[in-house]
Length: 362
Ligand SMILES: O=C(O)CCC(=O)C(=O)O
Ligand SMILES: [Fe+2]
Image (cartoon, rainbow, N blue to C red):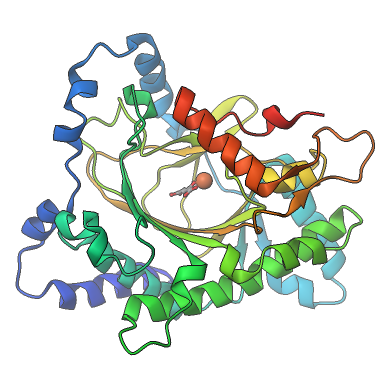
């Protein structure tokens, strides 16, 4: 029952924060104005065929699966370690996604993070949207999709996108409780990331040092996501289909399902398991491994009745880092992370979509 723990403990702490105001009023004041801001898209002539197709696919429940489960404590057992490494390598190649237990991050810390996350999202929308009130970098709070020109490009969600270079300043006198917990979680996540990077690099017969050194903790990002209940669930995504532009992502979700990934050309729903962390391979590891590890497309479907929270830790390098596989022939040309990110941003700005690694074929 442990991380029933995460959710109920977070709820307990939040209850205190919300004190006597009614939860409904707090929720209303904190929710971004999706319906008014995007009313032109909602009433406009969107591409109906695509929306209908999306609606048909929205019912991924028939294919609700458990991700491959890896017990990371096996890596410390001499007899089990090799098999555990092979299981990780197999999951990263076949699925691009797996879940881990005994990952070294305490449930208590995850519960504190969730409580802070709930508190941050429960602030009135006006506060969240006002850069002056933001605790982290100026543009850390985001919601919806400013570049969306059609409903299928719109993400019905809000997020704090926190560069850990800005969060690691917890020592100051004004440091908030959120900052402290983010500092602690990023320390714990970076240790876990190092262990996974080592294992995945070894699986390719390589050394993980290059990735670990390029992805120092203050290069990485933490994203706190909230998916508010959505009144038009068949018409928009909670988070539009994408791959992650990093080496790996560590994802902590709750009990509300919504995450889907593409496998064998079909969208499947991930069965939520609040007792595990999900690991997924990002574009940079796909390129570095010459396509052996797969950066798999994923998305979040909105829920009409329940809100959903998740936290993602993105293992990213500094922008000068060169990404190159030493396998022959290499599928992708050598590129820098800065160049990759710039190309992704430009594609999204011009077309509404991320093209990703196919732009970098050799
Ligand atoms: O909320 C989730 O389960 C997935 C989040 C995600 O894919 C992301 O933040 O990149
Ligand atoms: Fe993602």
